[in-house]
Structures are given as C-alpha cells and as structure tokens.
Length: 348
Image (cartoon, rainbow, N blue to C red; front, side):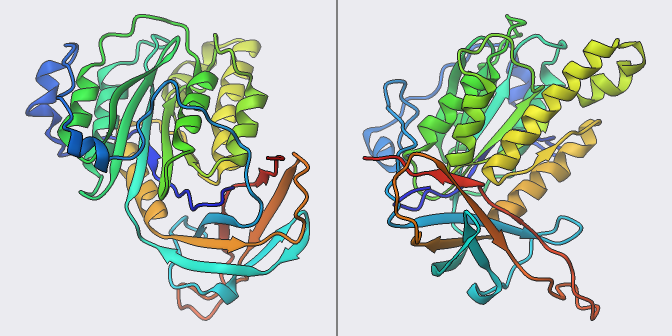
C-alpha cells in the first residue's frame, strides 16, 4: 500500500544458457573482487541505496491505494489489452471504485536475493549460474541489486543498470562459510529497503526455504509481505535434493522440506508474486522468462477506500476479472489475477 506508486521489479535467479559467465566471470569464481567505484552523478541517478541505517515502516496514508496486478490465463501466460471495466476491486468484501488505471511497461527494479549457506553444498551451478542468467535477461533500462545471505544479508552489488557491476557482485561470492541461514531476516531487510523505491519492483528469491537463525519470525515476515508493494518471486533450491533423496528421509525430515516449500509459496502468494520449484537446471531459463513477462505485463490500479479508518488492521483486497475469450476459440477462459493481499492502515 502506498500514497506514491511503488511498483515491482526485482529478483533473483535463473539459468544462463548462452550467458557470458563462461567467458569472464566464471574464471574468477571464488575470488573476492571489489565493486567498481560509483561516480557522484551515477549515485544521483540510481534508486535509493540499500543503506543499513534506512528506516522502514508499513505505515501508510489510506487516501489512495495503488496496486500492481498481473492477469494470466490457464497456462500462466500474461494477458494484455484489458481495460478498467474488466476489473472489480473489493476491500474487506466491500466493492470499491477504481479511480486510477493504466497498463504498465515501465523499467523494473529487481533485487536478486540469494541464499549462500552450505545447506546442501550448493555453489556455482546452483547459485552463481542461475543468478547470472537472470541478470543477463534484464533490459538496459532496468535497475538491479544483488544481496546474498547466510547468517546475515550482505549487499554484493547495489542498484545499478550496469550488468558488469552485478556480475562483479556475483564474483564476490566465495565458497559458503556457514550452514546456518537467516531467510526471514534477509527478506525483511530487503523489503524494508525496497519500501522507498518508486516504480515496478520485485524480489527474485533463490532459497531452500529453510531458516535456522533469524531474529524475525515467519509470521512477522509474512505480515510484511502482505502489506508490501514489492512482489516476491520465489525459486526453491531444494526440490532436486528432495527428489533424489526422499526415499531415504524420515517422516520429520519430509515434513521439514514441506514446511520450507510452504514458506516460499506463502511469501510469494502474500505479495502477489509466484513461486517455482525446479528440479533441473534446464528449467531456470523458462522461469526467468516467465517472471520477466509477468512483470512487464502488469496493470496499475488505484482506488480511494470507502473505509478511511486507520485502525492498524490488515484490510484485505480482492481483484477479479470475469471469464473472457482471450485465446480466440469462442469459449470464455478462466483468468487468474495476482496482487498483494491487502495493506495495513496504521495511524500517522
């Protein structure tokens, strides 16, 4: 929720077939390469940086609610060409009047949030190559940053439109040093720092879904995702491991893997994003192509709530689009609408 339009853009992974990592960055894997200096002019043009001392709050002004919406068909393909009359919005089951509407094809701001703990011995093929593939899919006008986490989140490359800076951030990844992971703290850290950025924004989260050491709880982070204007696209890293070794797992271990998957799924759903659980490296290319297509075919909707009470509660939002014949076969298609689930209207 926001008075200004905070849009999505973000992210975190994907296989880089044809990516130049084999020509340059791959030679430097495991080396700690410093980021290039940033000029004063460049610093003024980039989005607000992920400074540790920034403060973030979910408090909002409920005069105007703006949402980024993705509409897909039964096959998950984004649907374009819709108009305001196709959408209905309810807040807490009360119908609202759409005051602002526009299809958006603006640049993205993306954070690649990467788990880099030694949970399953993941390193180059499972982290660096997929993340590099996603970076390679960005357009010149997009902004991106790279954040990795183990026992704490670390900014490897701050917001930039220069791919080489982002690849340089990946080259700063050394072999994992810790088995402990702080997923919830890392997601909270990133959501907080994305809160002051305008435009289309998202987090591309590459993670196993396990958390062993965070100060934040799952409930706290889920609440942040519900009220955030940043979509989370989760990519599970543990699916292949689970597929290979599930027959050897005990009951409690199976449950822990299911819980980890549910964490990634819930964070994505709460924020209006989506989730993927790839089993093979070859699936990553289609994942980041899907994410890119979804983010570049969004709609921006705004409304002034009939309920102006700043009660601090979650105001649940539901957006619907009727069945439409989007594939031209003469039959109406059921469409899926993704958006954040609500907002917290806190007193000023």
